[in-house]
Figure 1 (tube, one colour):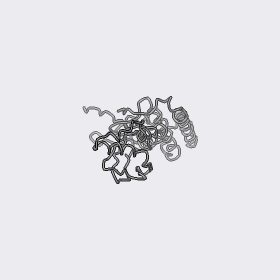
Figure 2: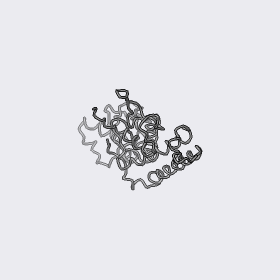
Figure 3: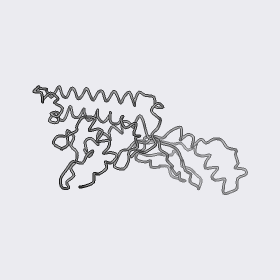
Figure 4: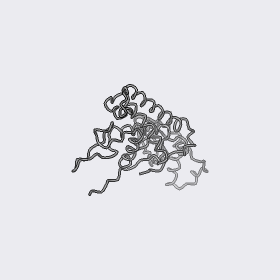
Length: 256
């Protein structure tokens, strides 16, 4: 007897989403959004592996991130003569408060007159940071300086940035107690697709069929869209309309 495989973080979310939309079939034929098949003998579905459901989750995470971004630290090393710098793939925007503190540090006494020769270049460099001019091309993951630093030494810019959340086979950066918000949004997306594009799959939602009742597909689709709107409203109340501070601030701890 084989040992059950522990679901990965993205599979755990997918299993929760499947339960949320009541798509609980145990075979591909009975699932509206089929899981992949483990082809080892005997063949069986892999729980939480549905590509379609996982795509809904990824879309929901991107939307969630716009309102509850992940705050992360970054270090960019400025080099003499260099204007353009790459930003990480999960970059959304700079945390302006953090960045401004970096380029406008607390004032210190001017020690340049008393500094030893090998210390003075660093003092001069630090005083340049707020005079360079910075251009952020967030969609292209680029930071461009209006003018390069002119001293021989490089300097590190250390500040925070707003990042997209992730969920994959290794980790999810969305705290456990906030994952319901992603499930609401992904359930909304799934039900809208189900109601508009998957006519055959609607049969499993034909609640009255076992009682001999005829229920039109359009009525089933209407019910699904109504439920999708409820999930959309729940997400709007909990994420979009709720003041940021009341949701616990930035998410910083990966949950696996």
